[in-house]
Amino acid sequence: MAEHELEVEIVAEDRFVWSGPAQSVSARTAEGEIGILPGHTPLLAVLGDGDVVVQQTNGQTLTAHAEGGFFSVDNDRVVIVAGAASLEGESAGQGAA
Image 1 (cartoon, helix red, strand yellow):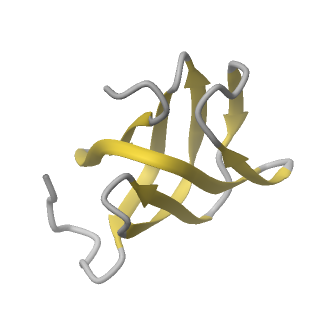
Image 2: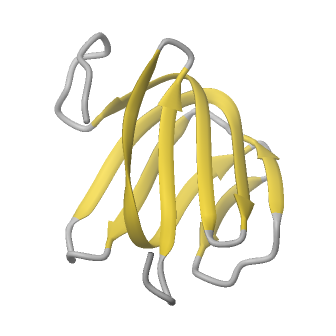
Image 3: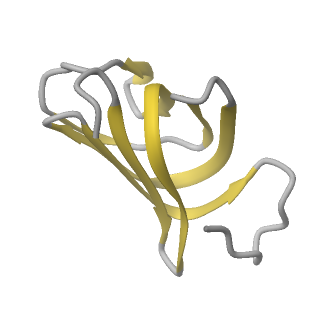
């Protein structure tokens, strides 16, 4: 992992959804919208229903729809564990790598 990037992992209750390096992550928590950049303080939050937007280090934007779960940040590692999650453009049962 490069010095100024995040390591992001998105998983659903029943499957792996996506992982990779990112410049930033934004999501909806029970407290409202949150944005994470490298160097963010450790955090554990309840994930709300909505989109998780990942700005990847290659310049692309990845959007996943998540339903419930939690969102954790520690040492530039972001882990999103959702009750259900799917990448934009995929149906809810499809796997992604």
